[in-house]
Amino acid sequence: MNSDSQHVTTTSAFGLICPGYRLLAYFNRMFQMRKFHFFVVMMGLLPGLRGTEVDKLLEEATVAEFRQDSRQALEKFQQADKIRPNDSLILQKIARQYSDLAVEQSTVEDKIRYAQTALDYSQRAVALDPHDPVNVLSLAVCHGKLALFSSPRDRVRYSRLIRNEAEQALALNPNYAWAHHVLGRWNCEVATVDKTSRFFAKLLFGELPDASVAEGIKHLQRATELDPGELNHWLELGFAYLAAGQPEKARAQWTRGLGMPSRGVHDEPAKQRAREGLAKLD
Image (cartoon, rainbow, N blue to C red; front, side, top):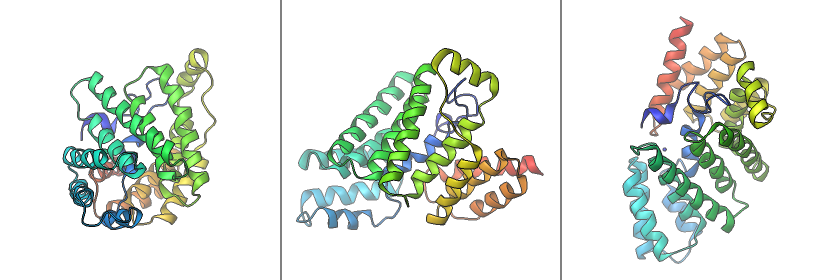
């Protein structure tokens, strides 16, 4: 949850509005439980399914997801959805696969189509279970993915939605590390929009939401406390410290994150960004 589109530069994602919105690529993993024991948990949530066809499909989908094979996982989750429709967890997992696959499409039109499909499934999941913070945060991920391929006006609109949805997820679970992570990166990136871009954004599309690097650091620090085994929290905290003008603290966080094993499809690209950051400090 790779192409260059997933890890955009500081000028391509929000364009004039919110540069550096590469955080959204990493948060596609909001759609998945990081543990390979997801299947065991799911079976606990879906009593009576052990030994059924759905059981087998969900297990196969989870194995594919663990292998980072989004196409295979999507196929299996869709088959499970046909047998057991309107299950919010299955819908959320389908959304995650579409989100992952969006950036692999060859045309902008197909990228948008996949991202919109991911949003549609996420919205269905939220409608079925609006109190699940993972479902709610998945909306932020989908809006972020759509922002990568949208007009500046829509990017401003999506930026507000992303913040609101992340805050809603955090309200549902104050200890949700990834919601803190999203809000941390969102604050840092919106706060560091240059004055010229901010002026034109306000003139054309309305005021950008309030944000601060200090608030971003606070959320990212909390993410590392809640989920210290997730390398992306440490790496992004490093970028937050760099934005705050504290390069040695940035170095410490990057060094820690780089020393952790890569487990997900976005871990190596995240590490590469950190290595490039370290190189600039030397």
